[in-house]
Image 1: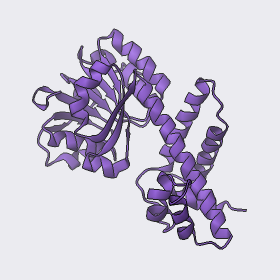
Image 2: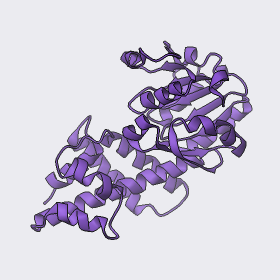
Image 3: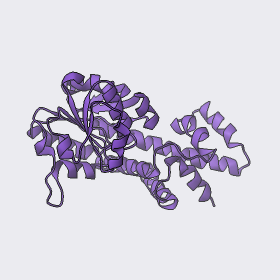
Image 4: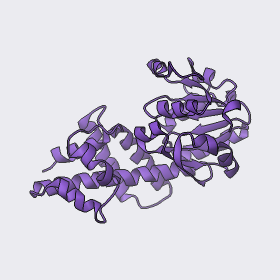
Length: 299
């Protein structure tokens, strides 16, 4: 998609959405953006080509591509199809335009939305991202893409403005499935590292040294490499990704695994642990504060 002839509607300008939209603006795309938090408009005051509008309906007018970066599938489904008597935006989208869901959504819901949108002549793509705010800012996100291969080819250059690793994994819903499973594996690694380092500390071992051993051995994972020293052992707990979102992500993964009629014992325990920690630590807790929860819950 060429920037010169593409108008983008961007709905959901949170911690991730703002830098993603800014990278599209830098590439020359025109954006009509909407977020419930109207104060976010000030972050684009110096950006040419950006217009903050008062509603999703206004944002999608004449848009070639609508990007959704929203908290969950319940909100997305209500936006598309309406709720409590209100109409959704799906029937107002321009025919032959793209609807790209870059949120961490339910793969089952995404597959259903694709079927409904296809009947309306809308091209659906699921393209969830991984890498956090830092990579959203520098445009090096990992982007997983689901949808028809021809759609992937048509929007690939646009995705390159936001990400470095861009992988097409299958038909509509496939990307959200892969993202959910990735988030589950990542969360399991965080919980395991938190429990292991707490036990090491209780035994009188230096957790910094123990983590060095993990990183030189088979226990190495994203948490041991990137989170333990930067956010956990120093009690910073400020990685920028909330525990509430991690809880949501592992619940999506569990629902998906169970819908596939697969064994899910560890996923169930991860959901339970994330729920307990989220409720104990309260609103706004960073997901790396799982280490603090495990430490405080020790017998």
